[in-house]
Length: 154
Image (cartoon, rainbow, N blue to C red):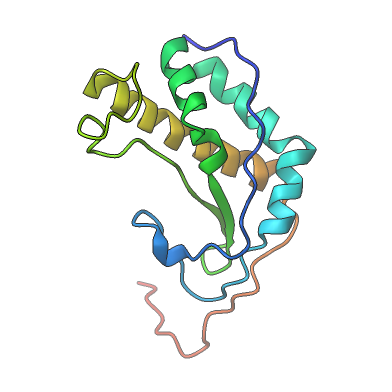
């Protein structure tokens, strides 16, 4: 299907964001999230590259994209380095479950739209991580597993 839209500006990554604030993120080990470097990569082209890939394949309707843009969901993404897992992690923004009660957006009128927007945000987040890891990041995790771990080879 796809969308023919201009990419929104990349998100600004807040250095002080605590991972414990997110219900969908679990990070162990080092808390050096390397947000300044990741934000620079996003601005250098990773965001536009990932957005282009995402927009070619998304099932999001143009009207749903506009809702997400008007709600500033694209600005609310958070990306961080997860040293323990040796990967880029992310938190995707979404529309809350109580969107109806809160009159969240005047054009938002169905659970189908809400779940479509939320799924699309998750898909975009994963594509951004993939682009960062494959084309931009050249560092490796500093985490070293303890040497006294049991050997589970069979």
